[in-house]
Image (cartoon, rainbow, N blue to C red; front, side, top):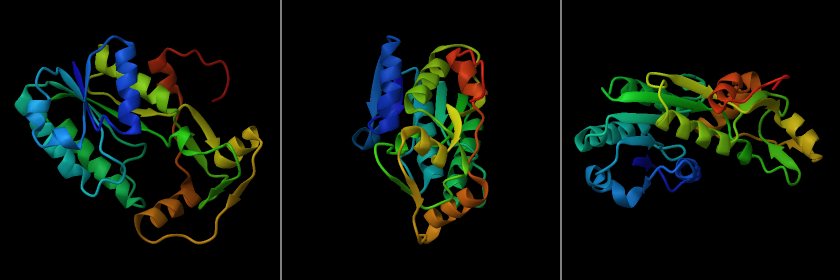
Length: 226
């Protein structure tokens, strides 16, 4: 039995589906179950740990979850982080970096997944507006492939102590738009705070992520560039 903490969001639902496709029993844990987390974890052997997007204090959330996992007797955790967690230019990523450190020092058997930006976050059904350079290079991750990788590392041997960056392909928004036959424009203006900082970082550096790790986890043979 595997608990999916944050199991009712899009990532949690995808991971649950990938596990159940392998015949693994799951428990989706959301805010309601969080009130008595050790009890919600009863009977589980491992956990996949996801914080909701832009959590205001992800290290506190992760610390509470790890304590509950220990109290419930679970020995295995896989933490859903982000590509390039330690980036001072993107302050909201730093909470993931601190949380990774907590996971590594938890005493549990751990694995950390660091997916790139989801391809599904781009609506390629029509014109695209982005508030950063559309020619910036990203390592985009397909949500279903990330979920399958999660199921693999949770159910197969050899992944304890590993940190995996995950991307399905290297591309730009402009390139994806061209493939889809839609227009892409850069919007004017930039918000304040962490969101503006993130877009400024994307302008300068994009968010590149290699693809071969995910290929290897999925057993995919690659014959050309990705």
